[in-house]
Length: 408
Image (cartoon, rainbow, N blue to C red):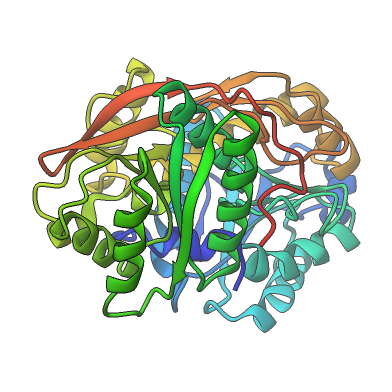
């Protein structure tokens, strides 16, 4: 598996919608092939979604897709985009990599003009490659791999989730600014995501002036990390960097604290859903990143208002900040279609590439002709105090990542 799916398997989510199709009006022909037939059309804008509604991706694609659906409902209620309703056609990949391309082709044959694909590079890229072949824009529900874009798919593939390198740079900047100059780095050597996250963080932490005083690795299903804990104690670090995800990452946290090691521990957004909290009671001095904080005191009132409205309308609170990437996807597409007046792939891609510190609920997004994923977005840092996560500060990365950073 690739980056995005596994980093979000850390989150314990509730899928808010299992929708087969949502629309404001029926399709009147689609204009697949990059939307060439839709340039001046009066019919609906047809967005196809090739996502995992069942299987292992259900808890990752589902919550972000519920946000997409909610946003499209709101847009249609307000009159659509340029007076055209948005029709959402959804087919289930069943979380099977081999089905991604088949499902994408079926959606295109059924009139889709833009594709939304799964939140993992390995699972989402087959559908995105089919869209690329047809000259259509595709957007991942949240792939963090820098490969999701020009480098790994083509010039019409995009992701609005911060890249793994972006996340690593933010957390390294945070650690240095906090005065944590001596780190022990602990790698959960199970996934390509954790390996990429680890390598990028190590690079940026050293670049910022930090020193690695010790390191070790483990596997997510290891029942004990006693050997690694002894090495942490011997190294006497200012902090521990943990490249992992629940449940194994939560077990590692519990063992580290039980051993009397109380220095700050920094990790990534696989922990941004509170579902794992009970595994480490009364956890403090633990820091993670988030695109937005959906569990209370986000510094942006617009985020808190949006989460309240979404929760009231759907009955489900977002499982974590990455779910709000669904809002960024829809708003970005709305802006691009309004600007170009079309769903033509080349024109939409050019409009998306023009984003320069464009503000969304998940933060600012800068893209370019070469970079189709955020590389330097500011992110929230969340602090755990006595088992309760709360917003701590927003950090702008000092070290800008490249598309090669964070590839495991």
